[in-house]
Image 1 (cartoon, helix red, strand yellow):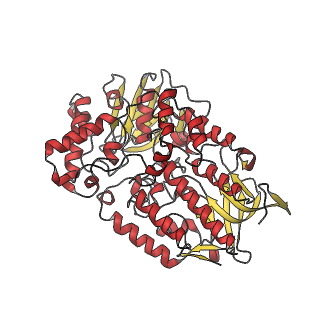
Image 2: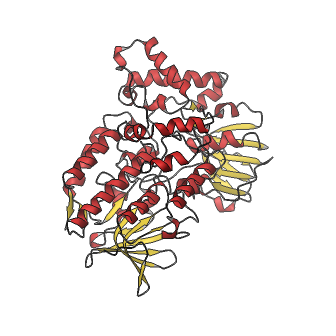
Image 3: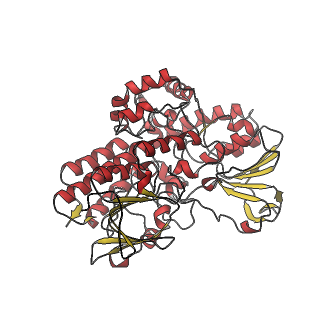
Length: 545
């Protein structure tokens, strides 16, 4: 192993011990860990700066829904205390600044190559190394390849026929222009009302001339409470650093709160409602992730909590029957889809210049030069179309790279048939390829991302360190281990109501994507215990040679 952090150029090929794809939350920390281990390592990033999600998603209203005190790096108490968030749920510009602050503090940028997309990665069975090619033709020969590509980083861009014919502007929220988009006084269409669409809609509503919102799947929503954070408040959180660091690794979803209510059936309806009201008023995701785990498993609990939220939503929509029918879910339970936090989102639909288009009655047929044509033949004329239509989640970022393992096996083709991983850390048949934020781990969806991504980075780093210290060159999850994990993952998932719904959690938003819950739902604490047990016992199931 070379003991420096700079690339070695041989025959126009960059030679590395470790190559990291991505410079977001996971990629930055992975680069830092590998440098600490004395590996020659370089990160490659498609954007012109660090931040991952917080670099690409610049759309109006983009912000956290994890509290600032727990959306953090935990390897440095000093780093934690020295950054001052302005509020509980900071907006994208502040988060991007924080990511740059971390990168600059650790002097990481000198080992990141920006504006570079990875085109292919092929495993060479003769050398037991990866040959990676970039979009500008650079070749990288690396022993270990670590994909920190992100869970929601493959935007579904070409979603509708005729997009190229539109005379106005079309923007996907996940590829929002750095210079921004002037929406003042314009006729704007927003397609999609998931977490991202909701943030956009509530933010641009005061500025647009008119807005048409194309609604297909309604979402349960929780009003966000976002107090300002003073230096005194942040100092109090800083004093809890070690407690928080321990806590987030043990809870169901990697937050500092967890399911702590008494069992559902031990309480009467009034007692349950009192607990729900308390968490509703907290204005965070705790209503979803810290009240009753039974909402994930039991129909009666799901129905009662869902009706609690529906009642809140109906009141805000002035009990307008048409809007309530369109915007309040009826065919799935609260918490079985991603739950968005919002700020006066529902009230936007009461504005005179806003029209909700019911895509369940007349869906989008195509984009035409003047706007959007629906299946009832109507053309909705607009100046700007905002696509809040989501991502090929979990698997998409890796599937868009031509990754080939043993015997030329294509990961994309494999995942088109069935999405399988070994705990979201490796895929059998692709030695020395490690993944963060990949399918079948909590980090694919059901986790405060900084909690799970850092744990995966630490586990991967520990696994590589163990192999090197034991004179091993190749690490690969066994077929048996992967099959056992997939079986366990499905067993846990199939006990829940989540698998009975259609959402990006199940891959339902991408035509032809194999149906499987993308994220491990057995709990972050349980997942971490299983990972830590593997490390303690010498990584059984991860074959080293």
